[in-house]
Image 1 (cartoon, rainbow, N blue to C red):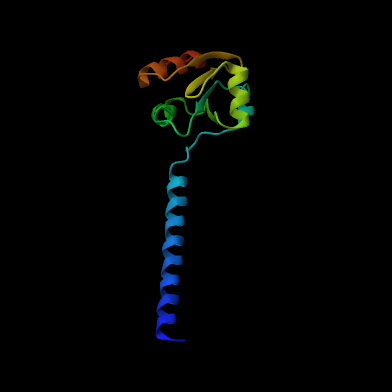
Image 2 (cartoon, rainbow, N blue to C red; image 1 turned 90 degrees about the horizontal axis):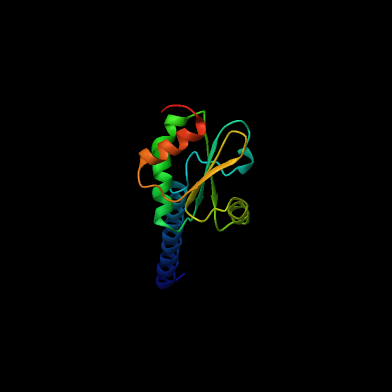
Length: 141
């Protein structure tokens, strides 16, 4: 093997490692941006606990803001309210939207029996969302 061939082989190896490293970085970024603690199991609606379903658009900043808002207050409702999510661009999400008169970037509130109570557009404050969720639990914050 000539010196030129050895150098080009080493260069190709470096490129492979750089591409591999970038793929790992991309996967880590995707994993970090997945919602935490939000189930997509909509069959949990009506199973004895009130439920809040976030209909999200993964490409909208408002969706991430709403998810962060929910994440900030859901500890107050731990064990009493199901926090669920569905993506509007999936077959399940589209079916949920159609069945519940919802839209992307909305919250749909259900009572413990699974009856829809309200569809909310993006709330302005954590306090307004706390008030709405409290209304479906029947408890004080």
